[in-house]
Length: 452
Image (cartoon, rainbow, N blue to C red; front, side):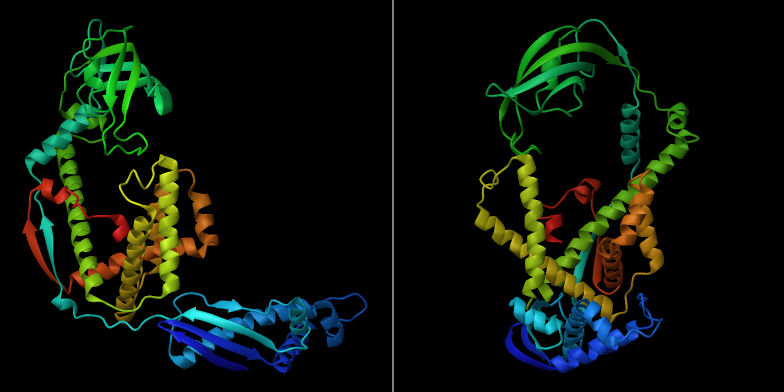
């Protein structure tokens, strides 16, 4: 066969491939000869079916399989000879003329096609010892534990129905119907909503206007959704809610003792406090790791400059853009709501796609160079963690991952990334910086999962 490079631009390669009909026919005869001992046809003894007869029956389908195997072999062998690796599966442009295709499948014509692909760039890794990051740390104080304990007690606090007017701290059961400019909106009604005055969980100003109401009272209240409200189509809009109070209940005394711990499954209050302390410490450790990991990824991104495979960037951008489009459609928001335009948003998300691809290639190179691998045991632990999130659906998930290699790879990828991060944190310069818990847990303005 003949493979000729016809175009090279950056990481893009294009080849013209010609596979002689004689070679295809030779492979076909070998395939059909091997089939003689496998097929069972009426009127022929096992292994005695003539190849000519098998060609008439199975020639076209067998040749189609041979063509597919040739495409794979040519791509593999071409890259091996050149010392290059494909960034993703090649694109093949086969003959479009049906008559020409038929001649190829009959073994009477050469197979001529073009093969296009992006190759992986050569990556020169920086000296990791030149990278420095700051790891924030925070101590778990008695106040942290007491606050978490108080929140737990508050979440289990009982309420007793009362007569009279609702006051701060009371719990009301209400029905409400909301409108904006006189029109009802999705999610704006509820027949049995529970509202606690003062807990700040409803729209600002909503619960406070319930003070002084009694069971059976009705009232129309005016509120304005916050500018950063989760449902973008409601953000910043003024709304009215027609309220009817169904019940008013007063909070019972907040008691923090061994009985509370036992209700929560712990043997004593001290045991509960220790468990809460361990939980908070784990949260602080995880927050610190996420922040130092973000710094590390930023440094890796800025320290490595190389051409990116356009196909990988396009694929990553398409995934991001599809998610953005679906989220905007479900929330009813527009680019104008976000103070941007579609073109500007596309440019921003294109940069995010480029960052993801660049970091992915760098992390992969680090892993390959330093023989960092994900073990089967680690994959199984990741799968077990995934199963715990969907109780009752374990077998369906197991079957899904077993039958979908790409899905299984999605479990392996984050484990690999964390192992590479662990490896790097042993080499880079890490400065521990004590901070308050508030500073540790505060998200940086530019912290964004999309940029990872």
